[in-house]
Amino acid sequence: MFNNLMHTSCLHIISCVADHSMTTSKTGSLLTTHVLNTADGVPGARMALSLHRLDPQMALWNLVSKGTTDEDGQCSDLISRDEFTAGMYKLRFETRQYWESLCQSSFYPYIEIVFTITDLDQTFHLPLLLSRYSYSTYKGI
Amino acid sequence: MSIRLQHIKDHILAANQCAEMSSPPYSPLTTHVLNTGRGIPAASMVISLHLRNHTAASWTLLRTGATNDDGRCPGLITREAFVPGVYKMRFETGRYWEALGETCFYPYVEIVFTITDAAQKFHVPLLLSRFSYSTYRGS
Image (cartoon, rainbow over all chains, first blue to last red; front, side, top):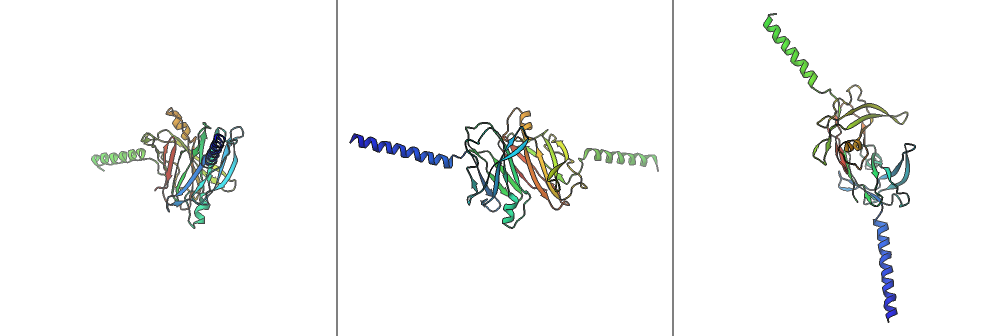
């Protein structure tokens, strides 16, 4: 009976750890973004974006990943733990294409948010609140 | 003309000259940088204005300057030079915060915008803190 209890407990612990790992890998992405169309009050869905890292030696931007926001305007898993090094990055949002798909023009043909990563133990959430004639961003977690 | 009228005329001319000297040069494109972290204008921030060169897919530097004590930078561009195209205004935000003894998440901010009707007036402000910023098209 004791062995059964231990067996059940071990299975429970393993299950909890696995669930936590799955939760962490999904919601604990190192760098995420969320695009919100503040003009229409909806998520900025299906917006193309890309992440770049600056090569300071060559003074060039290297493409790290490309993505598209989902129906909720979110995009995660932009960079893996191995790729996530300290440095200067930029997130580029293809805003003209986005507004064109809505049959509208935009003051901003694209938006690039350039930021510096020094503490690799943090997670970074960089949202973009956007209308045709304004935008804002902030550093979240 | 009588001496008295001449004096009055000279006074009016001098006043006009003073008005010309004190009024900022006109620019159809303006900016205003506000430090929302401290609730003050962002003075002495280096900014530059660029125009995209369509053929070379590069940028032409039009003007560099620094914001005044009110966070503004008068005389960015003349009406004659302001043509339709894609412009970029770059703000040296990292250097600005460094001068205040602080770090900033954004080493610089570049706002890229399209001008189709150069007859209008455009105001492109930047509201900035160490960890956020916003902009909008004003007039």
